[in-house]
Amino acid sequence: MTRSQLVQKIKKRKEQIGITIENLSTLSNVGVRTLNRFFAGDDVKLSTVEKITNVLGLDFAGNEIVDTKTLKQKRAKEKALYIISLVQDTSSLEKQGLEQEVLDTFIKEAKKEFLEGGYQKNLWAS
Image (cartoon, rainbow, N blue to C red; front, side):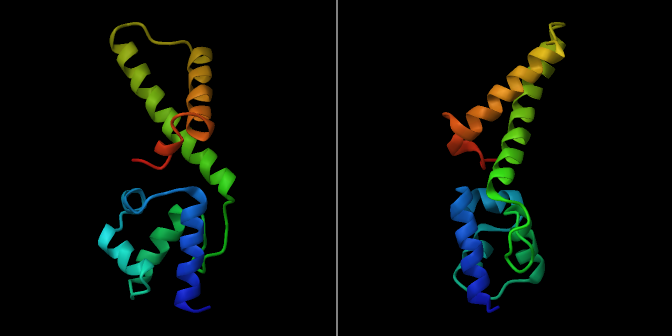
């Protein structure tokens, strides 16, 4: 496989999951300028390629190891847990912590919003 073919596979995956360069940069710990160079076909370190492909659910050769649906669901759950943990932490400080059943419902609803609702555009935001 040529570098150009790898870049095209990674670009396609990036578009499939709807992640911006800025968010990919944050999640992969690769600079925006480095990502732009990579997508332009310039040489980058192999560790950079690995970081990019890991975030996108691809192996080092650009082959899918995690399907897009699973990747999005995993990210939505992570985001939902983070948001709900903020609410729970604040409530606990006020001695009004939520019961686990209520927390689970909130997490489920937040996850749904990231996958299907008004928060879709924020799914990959850090």
